[in-house]
Length: 515
View: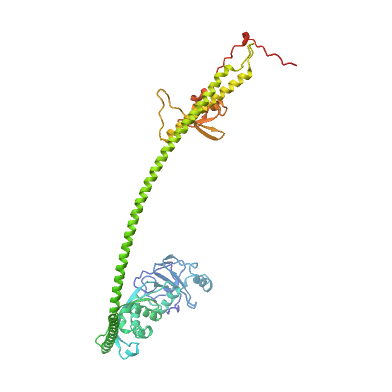
């Protein structure tokens, strides 16, 4: 029966394995194994629960009767059983027309979704007329060889169109190729004959634009290919375009185009020669001007070069003179600086010596005053002491001692500064250890370095005490002065022995003041 006829009686069917093992096919109608197409009603009666296998590159189409051509398409790969939930239209048919009963009427077709099937073609010599008005009397004969690549897109509408084009019969790829070849011979002749007019391509230039002609052919024939074969023309590849070079039309067109090319070349050469002659005459006319100009330019360049050389010599002499003067000035400045440093060192030494002399005079005066303490009234002959005289003597002695200490410190500092300025530090005297200097932390401020004598004076003056933090080289961290063994003696109270009491140990107070 026809593709959508389904006029055969429903014989029912067993659970079948619906599959296609063919290789060379475009369309193959399923039927039980060993049966030819359209020979048994079992191929039109399918039971739900039958196994369905669709390989990659295949599509299975279920066509149902009395449904105005409704169909289900199953794309491969697929391997399952026939169920109403995987075929929507089948669910409606069983639920409405067959009240849920099986078997149901359906034809199953397998479609080969080949990609890029090549269909070679050859178009024998046919007549092509140039589109240019001056060449329309010169027609040529053209033969074309190439290949058309076709495919069935994996879309339900294309699959149904392919099936409707070929009907319910099995169709091989060879049958598809032969049908396309028969159609191509006529279609390509018409397309190429109109190419000069549609594209503006000169017929003698076909071979140089063979790729563009292939695209032009594909765009013009794909609808016709789909109508005739039910497949899609993907692309056209032209392998050769041959002209009948022995034909009169080709020979005349070739001579005309070659002569025309020769005329164009000759005209271009003539124009080039004319332009060259004009240029030569212009150059000859301007030769004297250029020669005189060149001579003047040469003279000017020589004068300029001589002037530049003279200026360069003057600049070189001036630079040499300035360099000599600068070297002499620099040497004089260095000598003056050295003399100034020598005088400054002498003056510093003189000032230090003067300070030492002044301090020595002060010390002598203090010692002289201390020597005169015996002349002071320390007590009467009656055995009584003079407290005021004793206090004055002690204050004077303390002042002298302080002055002596300051003088010694100043002398030491002056000598140290002079030795540091000279970059030399004397070693300790024989039998004497090197003095140890300490850094102090007094009220958050760092002082130092201070030697042991300076520390003793500061302890006696009450400026520091045993809790004052100190550090010297070799100590891991700061520590109170009283905990440093080398300085512990500074904070030990001296043993004092009171003098013997007058009058055998007795003490007689002075008389009471008069009331």
